[in-house]
Image 1 (cartoon, rainbow over the protein chains, first blue to last red):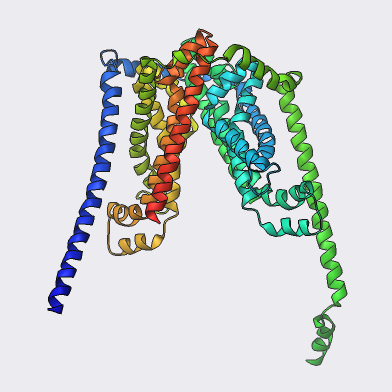
Image 2 (cartoon, each protein chain N blue to C red):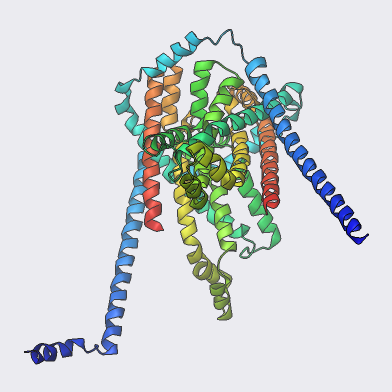
Length: 275
Length: 293
């Protein structure tokens, strides 16, 4: 009698487990099917509905690839100066961005902010806007405000950099060891003294590492700022493109690749030297 | 014979006075501090020299810098305000937003499909071809990532003509480079135990991948995929500026006609959809983390 009841209960439990397993498997299958449908429908729009295949033939693709393949190496000496400009633009933008990011990080760190909750929300909002707008859009805005030229590009990249640097620094401030802060408060230090002598020393390694990372990213960005009129290698590329000099475009892309590899090497060694 | 060296060695073996050792440590510390200060000072000088050189070479109009914020506010207030919302509330624009979403979905899916095998090849710990394939895959990923997505867009639009196909392929390459690095880093951080156990039992590279690597990186890869989609979507809003379809093509058209109020409306929608995508990706990643924990 007892054994029978236990057996029934066990069987009911096994049925429930089976049903649950089936349900979870059904959910997984449905999720994958939905994803596949979404990708398939999007693929159909892009490849079938939006593309005029009568204009894209193997021959036309090969022909234009061939034009790019004849790299115009005579252009390389002329590209040295724009390449240097690009690297310097990225450097200045990163420094300016870091300088603007520090006060925002201070406002946005919940444990150090001077004006309480509203200033945290305000600073977090600034960080989000800075990161959410693509650098090309920032470039367009600053070209409108500061005129054509490298200054617009530097400002655009600096503003784009604020988000990442200030967010990571704010998080570092929030994670800072409270010991030194409490010790300074106990001996009567004011807010500014605590900021400079208890918080900042703990944050510097994070700040340096992330500034180097962002410098690397900004070199990549500064190669396209010229496409919206903000100087550097992008401008050289735009000119070659406008003159239908595809070999020249390839030369610019080669220089871009070289510059970014150099930047990656430099930032790798700089990070190693700090850590 | 034996007594002499030992008697000579005795004074050396005796420990020096504690005071002397302290003084030596203090002197060493002082020297180190002086060297550090000097090094910091020199680095500062070099930095300032570089700054001056850069400002001079780029001929940056520093006098324009203090007024830039004011000018920006003025330009925004007089030319961009009020945003012409009627321009973005029409059917064609909604279609463009949808096109942007579709480009980002396909690019993220194809990019991940390209990034996964490349990341497996590029990971130094489990690469099936450590001699040749590993550096080659790494180089390919670096090249995909190094060239800015807008340069990829311009190149592909030139080859394939205007439209979403060129934009999607450009975003795919960007996504493969961006995600590939994240995926390879996840693979390089796995526990080598299961890999070695399977290898010892005679498993081939594919079996090792599916039974030792994939189970360990599934979650990290899923998180990376969601994050990458969000980054790709942000870029997808702009690729149309260089002829590749989506919201960016409206942006280009309005910029070229200098219709700044239309530009303002478009920029507002771009910020809105990017924020929505970021929230969605953040929510999905949080759910993923919860589901695993």
